Image 1 (spheres, rainbow, N blue to C red):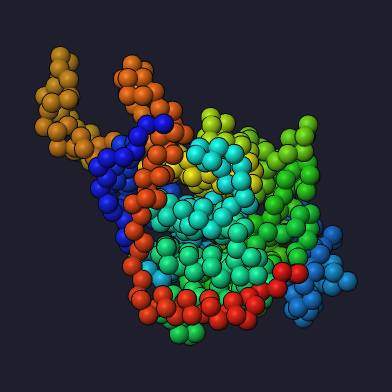
Image 2 (image 1 turned 45 degrees about the horizontal axis):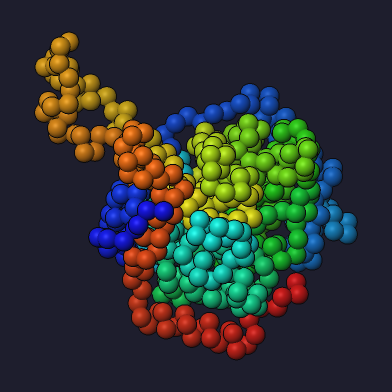
Length: 520
């Protein structure tokens, strides 16, 4: 690998905008912004197709039902008029659609730094870090290993540094060297201190949810009333496909609904395994599993911000392994986008792949997933940077490489690319050059050449001979050096020292009390 020592320009802090010197050159970042997707979404379904999938989802809820393993959730749904038989809950379409009608088409999440507020909906497309892999891989370790707190912290540094990452999901890699009873305390402390972006909490039992709610409130310097006035954090739950919602996730879902925090439900429907092998059937099942949770949240607190997620892909029918970035995955994401607009809900999808290392397969599968998010009108892209092996590995090289693609997507969305004013049509420039010259040296080009085109930070655009002379460094290796450079030069965003101390004291107190049970 090429030597990364030498001059480095330090930056980071609140916005992390400063360029840095790495082995791959200056990291030329776009500024922090909330991209707006101006494109018309790709809609593979005709009107009769939308109605057919809606009818399928409603009949699943009415005739088959969803298993709820949370007693409180069942009691609330029974009070609401749903049919509860043991764990099975059936709900009529009139109730479901009335509840869904209470949900806003967009909502905001305001983290401890208000300048990092995000809007989920309104044609925004936001990108988040990889979330929840238990394992880590990088070029230095060279093998798949369990995640540690140091690895987790390094991913937080990457998530904070890159302006194209708008929110930090769950654990970018599971810090397995922290005991499960107190892991959420140390991990949330790290997240709140090392980043100032929107924070996620897992719905894994009362104590974990209540602890993280309190930590986010403390970090924002908020009263309880201020905290509940608008979302300051969010969660994402998964149904247990097919057709089940477990106890701890529903418990956290309801707690956060009562506190008016952001809610995302994402069924994990793999066609051919946990859902029908047909994509329309898998999408209909996914919608049923998601809509019933949103209906519950809206009954508890009408108007609470909810997004419906999709994780509908297919399995390899030869091995049973999940596949991502496939044509079926792309179409199911587009179909779910149509249905989300039908229901007036923001949508979450993912930037995922099945590859095991950051190679060509990893990037083409992830690019397919990311562009499916763009085409579907997705508002919130989970796992947009760093995901490998179907969610079992987090890789910092892959994180950097994915951020290169995400920046390209964000640049693609900037309206100035397709502006059509007189300066853009450039008739005077075309007249000056005529048919015998070139445009390199004219004033029109000189005035614009530094900002006219996207500039990569990880790609290498030199020809083969120049690339070979410079050391013939392949893309993952360039990404590895950039990752190391960012981590070594990281500066955490400012946080009031009194707030930091209050957070640390809360963590210490909860550890003394034993943290959270591990037998749920």
